[in-house]
Amino acid sequence: MSESTIEITSTRAVIQPPRRRERFVSRPASPRQRSARVRGIVSQTLLTVVLVVFLLPFVWMIATALKPGNEVFSSPPTFFGSEIRWQNFAEAWTYVPFGRFMINGIIVSVLGTILVCVTSVLAAYAFARLRFRGRSGMFALYLVTLLVPQEVVVIPMFILMQELGWQNSYQALILPWAFTAFGTFLLRQFFLTVPRELEEAAIIDGASRWRTLLSIIVPIARPAIAVLAVFTFINYWNSFLWPLIIVSTQDMATVPIGLNSFLGQQGNQWQLLMAASTISMLPTALIVILLQRHLVRGIALSGLGGR
Image (cartoon, rainbow, N blue to C red; front, side):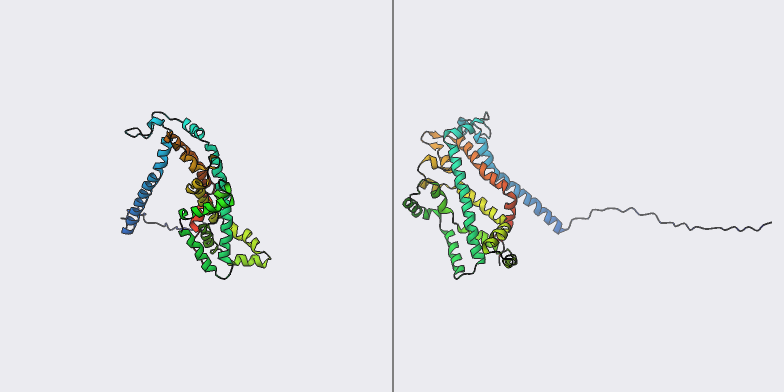
């Protein structure tokens, strides 16, 4: 009988205790979290109310532009008329030479904006980077001009334009307001945030002051220049007092003067006035949309820092 060896291998079973089911019990919010939640709800509510209040005049303007003329002041007032009259926009365009007013406004606003941006960049760079005697005092005196209202300078400005023979001309509408302390101050504050090391490196490489300004400072300052361009365009576009004084013919009238033409001795054409006002908003809305990316960044950065 052969001897056989029986090997018995015992395996140990690892017995794990059953997992307990975790119960997710919602913890009560802390006072700080409740306060933050309440502040968020209140902020959203206030912003919604402000948005509705801000948009209501524009919505009412568009609704009035689509009403028949005899229903503009109906009693009780209605938001919509008995019919939608899209032809009010065509009538507003032909009731007065509104196309000419739009062209004049675009020419004056675009050329004025370019000129203001150029002069503001040069003046701001001088005040921010160049060292010369009396710089601080001159800059303070420059800012004091912001306190002078336009109504104070229109009479001497009109006499000057008359002496130069520029009355009823584009240069009279553009040049008097092409040198503003606001644009200089805005861009100077932005230029102060640009590191000087960038300019020093460019100067070491042989760049001149002009090359440094055009190749380094201006590209960096594009958001601030966009903010200045939008504000300046809107200012030129909506200017009423100076064009009213310096313009004597319809051929040189701008949009605000043209809108005033709907109110006269022949009656007030309110529906046509609202239609023309809606049309006049298109250029400003377009420039804001085109410069929106730079505009948001420029508002966040310009004028907030300095050294």
